[in-house]
Length: 214
Image (cartoon, rainbow, N blue to C red; front, side):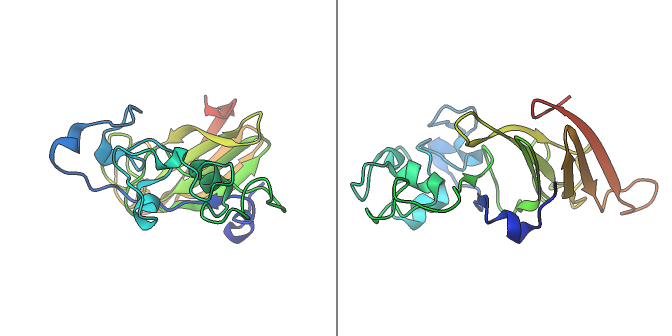
């Protein structure tokens, strides 16, 4: 089933990501050892809090572990409250006291400026897909767009399982502008793809097995 963005945000809150600007000896470092160099990593210190959020909260986003701390001493770590969309500085607002539908912030394992994750959204069973219409190509170039696939885990949380890319690296093709999911069939639109004519558009059909493109 395909959800309008405003409706879907009542279920899942998407986090906006920006690339961390790194320099000097950290340029080729991987502080949290997640396989991504710091300059490509939105969570440089690997504590569960994106760099931009830590900067806005006056936390240390390099070599610190603020995510594991408990700022309001309510028994929940800062990272737990961030993902639960509760106020980590208010002890009365925490995952235990929260009522209403459960929220979770979803974001890719790495992100850059203006990728527009959440441009399109669809969900079917335990699989969720969302487009990033200006996401980078697999090798880091362009801005052709990509699609992120998440699968629901036994504990109810969503975890990224795969990123889909267009057939070629070409900026501005809007791959992921539209997505729809029915069972194990995923349809992805790229309305500015050049197929026979400039910006004629294209649609990609995928078969998913366990939340992964087969």
